[in-house]
Image 1 (cartoon, helix red, strand yellow):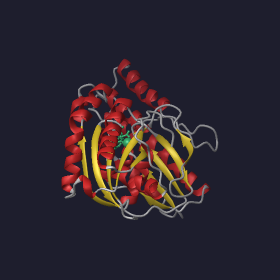
Image 2 (cartoon, rainbow, N blue to C red; image 1 turned 120 degrees about the horizontal axis):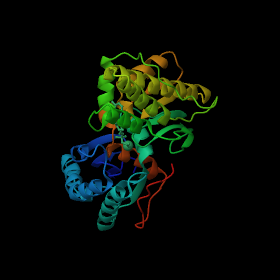
Image 3 (cartoon, rainbow, N blue to C red; image 1 turned 180 degrees about the vertical axis):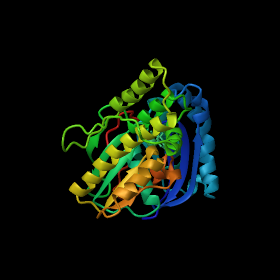
Image 4 (cartoon, rainbow, N blue to C red; image 1 turned 90 degrees about the horizontal axis):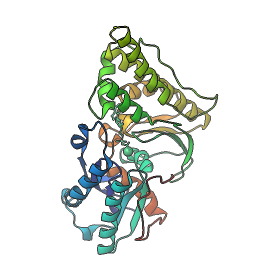
Length: 334
Ligand code: KG4
Ligand code: ZN
């Protein structure tokens, strides 16, 4: 069966999501319930609250995904679930729901790595072509990944401190913007000018690693020094300057990797792929490149279960099934 109908579940952070995917690319349904409103007043995701929401939501979200696809459990060929990385309590809700459904209906269970999901989100729109380099930018990850072929991942660079989305959210908090701060900074940056001098962390020559904590501190220092001198910093200019620094480093390293590895595609993935400044700058940088730029549409950038169903198809083809002792692994390696 090369067009299996897979029910996918994703609960690694603050979205409870279920989707039905046929043949790894056809989205029959894609239901996402966001908890952002519940976490907003705390300025970030509170793990215990996330777990409780997942427990309350998961049954309804799964039922909704099936009913939107006009299917019942008996129509399914397999279950797929995010097994990690993520918040352990949050992961466990999805993993246990998937195991229960798989057991009750005698279906195979496919474990999926959350980052593989973000990358394969692109497959829902157009086939991935290998070899490729993926720039993964989310709230928990900043990585450059070389994929020689389908299902094969080599991390060639990663952040040494904060993830890029995390840096966005922290800078947003110092600017007193609501959570999640990424989209807020993105909007603000569009109105400002990148006229404040901020550092770019290139690290050692040839390194594909990233670092964003120094930049975050530099932003805090600019605000602090200005307030001590009784001066005003225009928040839109600070946002634009911060975004310019982030985007310049991400785009330069991603382009360099795409050239060095001589790839067919540069595939952008994760929540920060929704960033307008990053999208525009990548498009410009890769205009005359051999590598084709792939960025998912906004809806597929942030956490969802359709991407998990897309990645699960690779596991289905290579019979990578989990047993019913599958556990959620917060630090699962790719
Ligand atoms: O992939 P995702 O939904 O969840 C994780 O797996 O982490 O990414 C969420 C992150 C948050 O840090 C959020 O602020 C950031 O993506 N984000 C953005 C934008 N939209 C979401 N960052 C910058 N610009 C955006 N437009
Ligand atoms: Zn994610």
